[in-house]
Image 1: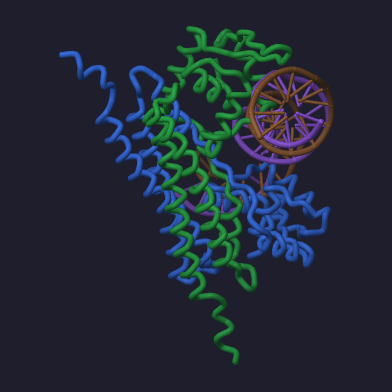
Image 2: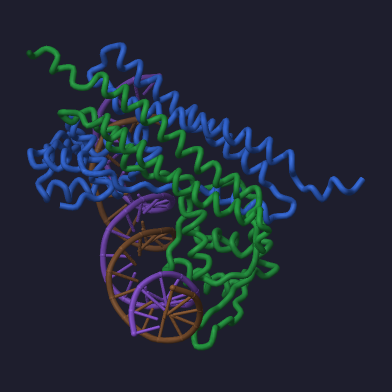
Length: 191
Length: 191
DNA sequence: TTAAGCATGTAAGGTGTTACATGATTGA
DNA sequence: TCAATCATGTAACACCTTACATGCTTAA
């Protein structure tokens, strides 16, 4: 069966242990969010679809009057997870308005190219900082023997996110300096 | 007025000179494609909307019986372009199934983490190679005095794409080696 | 008691892709 | 003549976000 984008993330999160939709959303926001996002309006319906398809199974885990359903993978769901993770990787999409602006910055007069590059640098630094915070929490969990330590592979992804964004910040800092150096050559003639 | 994602790219491409929808699509595919995609079914309707809104203006440029409309920015459209490019950058979205797989690879048995990392490395190398080809064409156009040379800012974006993907390829090559080294520690106990 | 967080969902609207549909022109 | 490329569009469907809607629990 075909798995939707959200279904893939759900199966992955349930592969480690049973969780509620709310929990999955929280995990998405604090881990895969920067490369694989999902909202409630996708997660909840998808959980129902997956349950109907027999890939996951819900158990009532209400806390008093507050409803709560915890889902876990079925045998069939675990197989689907393995199949997916072993299949060649699919989607890779990037949408970056900062890059688009820089791409066109040359035709604007005066050109804001250097400024746009600095914005990209700042954005990279911000994201890196945010991810470093998450990493600190993950490492703390690993050292103090928390019930659910993050594994090496997921920490590798986190590290990648951090280093990628740091690299990007540096790259655009340098690019901005270079773009500054040759801004509006027309001005040089005057004065 | 609010510009849609596709409208931003269209205004940008028309800022340099008048073009047809088909031409814009070709340019998108060979330049901004890796961070800002658009399909015919977005471009053509958007051109009509922008024309109705008075930001662009179409001129008939049919070649015999083959219809063709070339659009150019109006004064209002040029102002909208400048406003957009000077506004703080918006959208940044990444969707990367390879990273998602790697993130979950640790819970699969046996873990395909190293293999998934190698796939990411290969993907990075491929994209870098494709972008280098585009860069070669762009540089050739610059040197031989082609009618429409690419400007510095757009070449900066291209260079970023190339170096980013090369960096990514190297990063995952190293990560794969590290993940190999510590695969399935359980096996060590048996035998 | 009150705010923060837990918990589940729906509705509306926008965005985007793929497949379909048609036909002209140009160069090999 | 035939393939590649130029050229413009529509239909159906999938995906995704934001806002809306509701109510419980826990700790300060």
